[in-house]
Image (cartoon, rainbow, N blue to C red; front, side, top):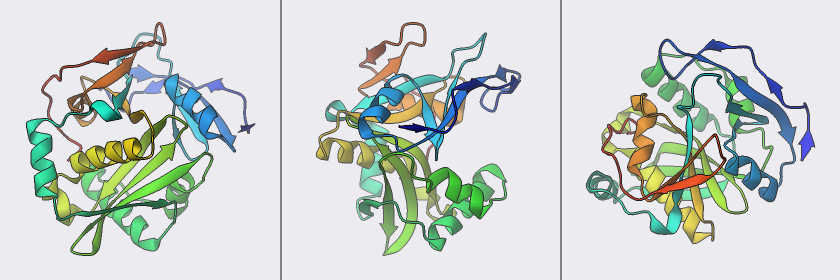
Length: 240
């Protein structure tokens, strides 16, 4: 690993996940992170975009809970089986990271209709195509048209979902759910044990859906231990 900065702690600011809360995070910048080093980073609850690595260190809150699926024990729920059926004709490809204008157009579309945000190409490239560790992308085609793209990091024992984007015209397909199932399946196919979903936040509907994928493990911030959870708690699925 080539550290570009020592770990630092941010100033406290408005929490983007829970209204009325404040958040603070530890962060560092790095390049040339190996698969083995990334596995340690993920197992300790860190996330990343490009060469920017971070984790929450909020003084009065521990609601951002790292969550990962045990790939060979994933059992789709009824709604997830329905998503698989709805997407049975979707073609999925996993490939090396490759920037294309078409992908940025999907990102712009996704950011606009999901978050009402404008997008900057340089920021997009920096967040998703600055390759600081082993990484791949997943591509989803409907009638030979690129409908969605997932950005994934590859550690020595896990596949980590960084972000997922799709065209608004294909929203009815539940591509978010479908992609998580296919990416977990892919992790298993290349001999990896875990599929990391990032942070689960029970009180945020956009993040709570992650608990619907089982069997999963959640990390206890106090001990660093990953705790197995066998049975799902019904939640609204907003990845769709």
